[in-house]
Structure formats: structure tokens, C-alpha cells
Length: 324
Ligand code: SF4
Ligand code: MG
Image (cartoon, rainbow, N blue to C red; front, side, top):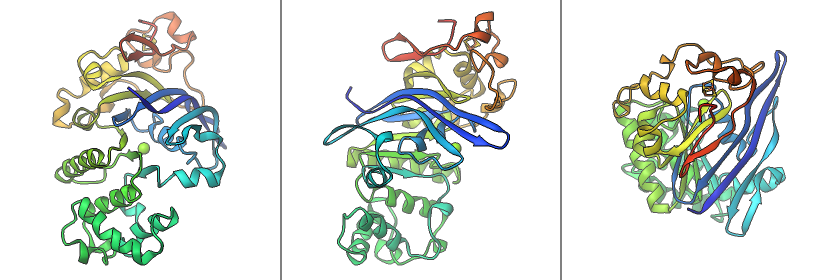
């Protein structure tokens, strides 16, 4: 498989009054061209921070303190973290686009949905002006399966249902035909029935546009249905990476095992990641060694002292745990 993104030793810290929050530490993974790669974990594990850091989308008091994000663009590999604000802005929203969780927050109530789609295209010079963009927006609304797009293009966000709004947000995401689409909990704010429709839509758009998808979710059911490969995050670290099959059939890390046990059947979409005893650690003073050791029933002496590195156990299956 050919990588489109190689993330190496990515660390993001937040400088708060209470202390330095080490939100993610030495996160490394590859994303392959054309796949759906899921980042999964509990709230606060650093999955959103990771996805945002990929294009320097970290705001103060956060700072990317370390790492490389090599993006294989059409012109060759570039480190996205070395680009200037202006250079990264050109890539963000065009070659690499985001869909965020809450469609209400992603849309501006004062502008029509057609205008908002057109604006994103105009900024990246995909259309000459807003008028041309609004014409194109009709096709985009059609491709995200919004009925009556000629009429809907002139609607304001409040005139649409939550599911329709999220389709518009996806429309803005795909308007410039991105090579990588980063979807951060794209269905969490929606009803269960609408969730399935939105996932289907993301899957079909990925095929249609040959995009690569990075899916951020806490929902293992969504991962099982949508992803090709998975990285499991815990307390700011990646603890396991593998294919969906490897992770679901042969989970290695005690945390991953716990997650899967907490969800008897991932296809039922029961969200009970909290079922593992103990709480997520404070990331100002994270536990030494393996950050999972206070909650791990397999913990040994070494686990308190030494940080386990990600090692490849079988083809493409990596785990960071002293048991291996
Ligand atoms: Fe448990 Fe030790 Fe493995 Fe961490 S390194 S998951 S504490 S066994
Ligand atoms: Mg999040």
C-alpha cells in the first residue's frame, strides 16, 4: 500500500494555568491512499487534537511541539508542519478537508447553503466568482443526496433538518474534490437512522472521488462498518494499530480488549466505552511508563517505569504494550 500521509512523533501540548496538558505524545501512523483510516478512543484521548494537528489547526494555548506530517502531494512529499500559515491554508479545505461533528456550529446562519459552498470554492479559486460557485453548489447538493437542490441551494441553515445540514457540511468538505477527507465524529450529533445514512454517504463519496478518509470516532460500531484500518488511542498515545479484522478478531492491547468487551457486538452500536474500570488520566501529570497501567489488570513492575513502544507483532498489526 502506498502512503498518502506519514505522521511521525507528533506531540501537542496545551499551556494552561493549571499546567502543561500533554494532549498527544509521539503519535506515529501511516494513512494509505484510498483507505478509510479510523482513529478511535474515549473522549479526551487526543483523537481530535491529532486530526487537527495534521494541518496545524491547533489554536493557542495549544502548540505542536514536535513531529512530522509528511503528505504525499501530486508534486511530491511535503512536511505539512513546516508550511507557513498561508501555504497550509491553501491545502486545508482543498486537498485536505474537514467535516466536523456539529453541523450547527459548522454553518453560518446568516448565509444560504449555496453561498457557503460557493465561498469555499472561490477561496481556493475553483470558481471565478460566487455566482458560478452557487451554480456548482446545486450539483454538490445533488451529490450529497439533498432533494430538490435547485431550491435548497437558496435555503438558510435553519430551514434544514440536522441530517440535511450535515449533508451540506459534507458538501462543503467535498466541494474542492479533496484527496483526504477528515471526518471528526461526523454522525455523533445526529439521530441513529440519520447516522447510518451519513456514513453510507461518506462511503459512496469516497469511492466516487477516490478520496482517502480519516474517520475520528468513539463508536466501535461505526469503525466496524466503515473503516479499513484502525488506530486505538488512549490518553494521548496510540496503543494499537491494525486492520479492522486484526483489531476486532485479535485485539492485543489490554485497553483495546477492554473496549471490545464493553461492546458485546459492535454492530449493535452500543456506546459503552466507559465500561472499563477507572478513569482517563489527567494529562498534566500522566502516569509514568504505560499510561494505561493504573487501569490495567495485566500491569507488571516495568509498566510503571518504561514507556512501551509500538512494535509490529504480525503483518501491519502494531501494539504498544510490555506483554509483547
Ligand atoms: Fe498493561 Fe503493561 Fe501492557 Fe500497559 S504495558 S497495557 S500496563 S501490560
Ligand atoms: Mg473530539
